[in-house]
Length: 257
Image (cartoon, rainbow, N blue to C red; front, side):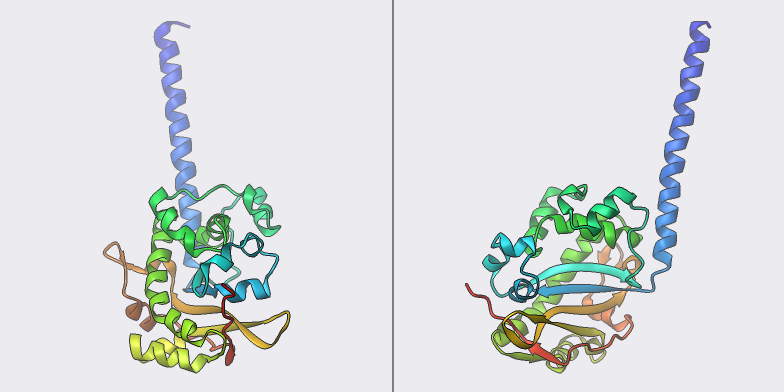
């Protein structure tokens, strides 16, 4: 084979490989879009940090003392495309098994800018949760990692600004879901409260229900933005489906710090 023929063969192989890569990436993007199309809404979830270790003391964020140091504050749980069962879209089986068995240190780290990661990290129970939430839920959102976590950061800022004062003021006492709903209605419009759910659980050594989680119903993740930025929370709640109120009331565990 002459030099020219050899170069042509190499060039042809490169073209074929490039087409294969582009086609594979396009197919993966298309499949993610198809999975995202199954979603009609999403749920943004927050945990009350002091209650987390009362109901899940084996969590690494508890055993390390990380959550105790956070004190009385809300932390990010996740942004979940609905229905909840729509998860792990195009995620390799090995990574899915590691996530489901709690081996979060084996998951590939999220591919987002370091400044954003640094801003988000203080609001998670452990750093590996970002990778877990992306693989399980973000992979089905129809958006990329940057947009997904930017929206989570912006949502957390808006939501915690409304809810966290209520939780802090009630720390050590009971808080009713209707109190939270009324606050949301007054702050974000009369429909906002019907998009809120309170989740309670049982904790060792505490009688009655303990508030564990706050959930907000939102439009699907692909529809959270307008002109490249997250829509105002009031607009998002107005166009989100109603959800059940959940737990009528529960104890707001106070931090021990």
